[in-house]
Image 1 (cartoon, one colour):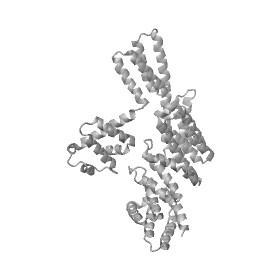
Image 2 (cartoon, rainbow, N blue to C red):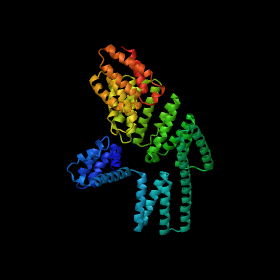
Image 3 (tube, one colour):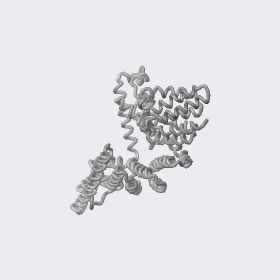
Image 4 (cartoon, rainbow, N blue to C red):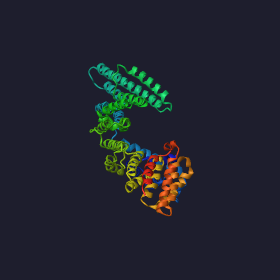
Length: 489
């Protein structure tokens, strides 16, 4: 329970944390300060430490029931999250309508039930939620039987026909979803040739099953995803991008559904842009960026996420093409959104996007500006998030402070880095090499000896085994820096 509680607290975004504090004040009487204190102490921890936690509550009665105290906070957090995510959710609204229908029906409020039932059917239709539609159709049947409608058989037959239609839609959705899961599992296998054959066979089998059927929205989304996944796995990126493009357009035609299923939509956009990015065609890439940003009817938070996601890919695209000035023009907008740490940006997004900006500034030798981005990554809470990026940032920060002449600070940073590198030298061949060489350089007797240490570092770097690049993020950036550093005196 303790580790689960710590993990949940660390996973909350800013909005969820803010909501919990207000929620706890409303729902805990008398001891809200203790629970909020426990919450805040857990937030500040980099790793769970029960002894440290107990010291923070020395002398408090809660220590007598320590396990129950923590367990209650965990339950309170879950209740808070339910309440937070229920606000504005169409799915929640439909479930609430069903609960209200049950209560009002029991009190013979049939006219009110009829209004709620029709509202529920409308929402279910807008969301293409066929399972919920069947629930509201069942209520319609019950209301027809209790009502005074003229031709009872006709009305019940109409409901039965609608149920058959939605059952068929639901069947097709489930079929495509199951096939998607099967093909996804094959795509994760480590035998690409064998899995490619199996995926292609599954696709043919599935397409035979759906021939002649009109597919509902969610089934079309699943089908496009399957085709795009298979084409990607077969390295047919142009074909894959066309399938993903089709799904993006389909999503954008139904903005109300996107609002309820933001993650699924954004995953489709990411798949579309990534396939185009790998094709490395400037014209196609720009068209894809414009298309991804064209969903004007989408909610603002979705639009902003698409904006920063596309900008991040633009930055990488220009960097790969050597167009660094164009890449730099994207940085201010990315910085504006990242600094806000909006709720829709997960920690992995913030760290990854910050690192890409950091790389650009490092390669451009704009070291003072890169320090701010490096500190954002290194100081970001949740030290188990993108450890590879944090390690690469720590490595590049040594070089940045070396270039800026911050020798006193660098001496401390090198000592900290070497302690980590010595724990597992196999994981940090480049980091160990750079840290030890920079340590020798900053203690060199004169500038010539300092430069000699960097020259020797470049020689040792060049002698590393070819597969070293796969072991440690930052390999390429270190090489670019050495290439420039050895040439200058």
